Image (cartoon, helix red, strand yellow):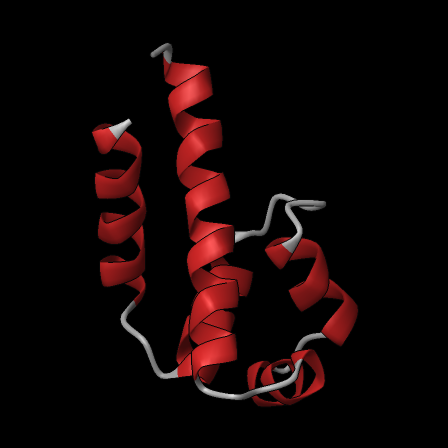
Length: 83
């Protein structure tokens, strides 16, 4: 897998993980957005892979979900390396 395709795959996995974690907690986009201090549209864009989030945005979302950012990245990398 090329570096660019690997990067895109990890970003895709991060988006999927964030959505899964939000749904597991029973939170709406608006609830996560309010806790994170960003718009609900941005949370939706990240989850649907319509935007490449900044590090700040990812940190805000993971904090709002009360999950460890490093664990999300690690989980995403592991899921990509399996394929």
